[in-house]
Each structure stands twice: as C-alpha cells, then as structure tokens.
Image (cartoon, rainbow, N blue to C red; front, side, top):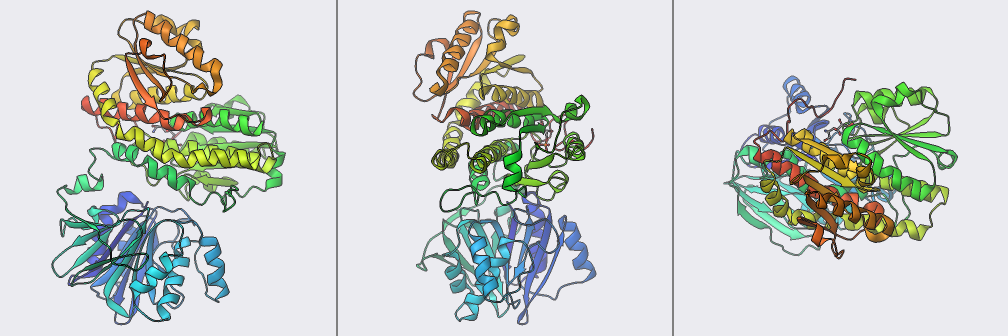
Length: 614
Ligand code: AGP
C-alpha cells in the first residue's frame, strides 16, 4: 500500500504533490519521490526514509518549476527501501516517469523482455519494468494514454500506475487494477490520488475509477477508458469527510479500517506466490531447497499476536510436512538454552520486524548456526535483514497498535511456508497443495462475508458493554484464536479476558464459570469429528453453569443452537484454515467494545506499535 499523487493545473506541481504525499504518508513511509515535467524533460528527486528526507533534498537542490507532476510514498514490496528502489522510476531514456502501488505478478517474464531489448535496469523493482515498457510503447508513436493502455493489458496482479511524459506536459495518465485510484476534479486543474486525502484540501469533487480503467487528466478535463481502449465511466461523488476521516477512509479508527482491509491484504499476501502450474514460488526464501530438505526441526519464535499466528502455523506445518515444530515466546526462547543445530529452521514472525525480543532470539539462533526465516510485514526492517530468508506478508502499513491485518496475513504466510516445505520435501502431492492454495484464494471472500455482518458483532458489543470478564474457548487451531480474541479485549477494552484450550476446562478453569459470564466458543469444523463433539460437550457444561455462550460455528452445523445464547456463523472451510475467518468476529467485537467504552482504539494505554526494548 503506497501513497500516490498526480497533478496538472496552474499551481506549482511540486507544492501540490508534496502536500498530497504528506497527507498520504500513513500509507507508506520507507521512501518518497517526485517527478515534474519541465521543458521537454522530467525533473525528479527521490530518497529513502520519510518524506522529510525528500523535502530536505528539494530544499537543498530545488527542481525547476512545473505545473505537471507525480509523487509517491512507498511501502516496499519488491526491492529494499533505498534511494534506488524509491519511486518514481523512469524509462530507459528518461522520457517517462512512473509511480506504482501494488504488485505486478508477471514482472519476472517482462523483465527478461526489457533486458533482451538492451535496456539498462537500475532497480530491483517491478515498477521500473513497467516504466520501460510504457516508454518503449510511447516511442512507437501515439500518446501516453495509448502507451499505458497497451502495457496495462499485459500486466497481471494488483496495481495502480501513474505516469507523465516529458514531451507532453498537458497530461498525467493513470491506470488501476485491484488497487485504489481516485481523481480529484478541480477548476482548470485536476488531481490523482491513492485516496481522497491526496487532494481534499483543493477539491471535494471526486471520481472513483473502476476495475481495469485508465484515466487521463489535463487542465481542461478528465477522460476515462477501459484497458480495451473503449470509453468508460468512473463513479462521480462529493467528498464530505474531513481530512482526518479521509486518512482513515471514512472509518473512525485506523484499526477498524485495517480490519476491513483484510480481504485485500489476504489477496495481496497471495499475489505472485505460485506459478501458472500452481506450484508455489517464494522468491524471497533464499534458503536452498536442499537445505530445506535437511531441516529436521522447526522452531517458531514471536511475541504477542504474532506468537498466536505461530501456534496456528504449528498445526498446519506439522500436518503438511511431518517436521516437528515448536512455538516459543521469543523472550523465553534464548534463556531456556534451546537445542539448536544446523538442521533447525527458526521462523521469526513479526509485523514490525523491530521487536527486540524476537530480534535477540534470532541473533542467538544464528550464533548456533541455525537457519532463520522471517515472516514480516515491513520490508527492510531489522529482523528480515538479519535473517537468511523472508516471506513478506504485504499487508501494507498497519497503523493501529492492535494487530489485525498483520495477524491474518502472518497466518497466510505461515500456511504458504508450510505448503512450500511440503512441496520441496514431497510430503504433500501437488494436487493436495493446489487444493489448499485454492482454498486460501477463497479467503478474501469468506472474510468479506463476515465483515458484511459486522453489525451483529457491534450489537453484541453493546449488550456486553458492562462485562467485567470474558473467556474464550477453542480447540486445535481454534485455541490460538481463543488466545488472540482474549488479547484483543485486554489491549483494547482493558478488560480481564482469558483464552483456554476447551479441553483444559475440567482441569481448573471451569471454576471460573458463573451465571452471565460471557464465553466465546470457537467450534471446530466437523473435519476432525472427535474435536467437534468434544467442543459441543464443553459448551453444554459451561451453559449448565450459567455461562452466556457466544458460539462461533460453521454455516450448516446445527444442533448447537440450544446451548448458545448467541450464534456467529462462519463459512465452512478446512480445519487448518478456520483461524482466518474465525478471528474476524473477535476483532470486530473488541474494536466496537473499546469504542463504546471511550478508549483510544488506535493508541491503547501503555502499548506501543513496536516493542523495541527487551
Ligand atoms: C498485538 O495486537 C500487539 N500489538 C502485540 O502483541 C504484537 O503482536 C507483538 O508486540 C509483536 O509485534 P511484532 O509482530 O511487530 O513483532
């Protein structure tokens, strides 16, 4: 998820673009850049780090005046966050400048084509490939619009592209597929942005582009066509948000926005991860297949919510690979004198990539000569930099302290790792792996369905506003989700909440049950029958003691209604994948309850987004 701005009008483009990028910096902040069309050439500047670094460069070495320009703040997916990989990227002769948000899945084959044409590529990014292709198409004649249309019809993946042509200062051209793009319509000027925050200070008249559409903005107007070149229509609307709401896309909290971004985040986490034949390809995993085949133990280390993602991963990885898999709290790991060898694969899960406990743990593991693989959301952060390999989760910046899309994509990445290991080690057949990958690709739709029913969770939060304690029960992969549901309530509503393995109830916790006590129960799919029936028995036991049971159960799983005060229906998915849809109701509930209690949901008391001290 990146911040993109385009402008053409009568103001100084650099001022408009930089101001727009400042409004969008929450969308990505590991590098920034600007490109201006001036007197037959493109003037540009770009820098790693926050926008302030770019502004400092511009102050020291001003670009020439221009009324046509584009800009970008980056959340890196392909290529480390450095000056070279920062956007904009230029074509081979510097005529076209391009900025991009998203992932071009088929960039590897396109890169070969560009290199075969003799072009010199300067960065590691997929974006630069597109810039070269557009410039080559433009050089063959026609307009930037036509070149954009020609190239976009060849690209696969999710992308927003915005480009300028040094030889045509009258226009800025943009295209979108599965990635946000909105036009701001002014008087004698027009704007392009990743979202309305880019231009809301200048105009509240907006045009939302549809799928596979290309827009050309000039001073005089806005023209929309499809990738097929035929005229098309965007959706015109008036923006009545204030700037703060615009940054949250109209939501009250970044966390709530990020909960609702999860379908997109899951889809992005899967992008480019399997080839045309359905074989998994994890291009950032720089550990050889032979080394992966020699792994005889896996230890997952993480903290907090990331640790719960690790617990889910354990069930899946052991089932698919038959490799013993331990899950350890990072801060406990190195002090327990763990048994580590060259055949141990340590997997560090971290959204921020800066958690000190996890970082110190992987340093210990590497000193013991174990291989370390990071599952991380922040490109170029310390933990992946100090690991042998990485799987980026591509969730985009997660601003809310309470992790939601970060967590759900950690699970997706962990599933991909387990399937990849099974593919490399031959412990699952290709068709079995392809079936699970197909189920993962259905997950955005499953999560969206739960989000569509958010009001039911909000109503439940209203009913339970006075609760002083809430319990969560789960079995198998539902147990980590019970733990995560409890953590969300602790960190957001400041409520006592506890997650248990349901089988543990009779070994003590059932003494906690009293009339009216709310207990969320995650009922396993019927794929593992003995678990399903045992979970139902646990629900009967607590209900007999007066608990207020909130039962999360699959769509067509009936017979539990008589023991449930509230039923939350989940889409039917395989046993190991149930955590993905199952966590979403608990996120919605915790977010709403904390909101009702008047807490700062994005910045809960005593907590930081990244714990960089041990
Ligand atoms: C989760 O909601 C919390 N923000 C916290 O438990 C977090 O998951 C933990 O601190 C680990 O952070 P990391 O994923 O950035 O390493």
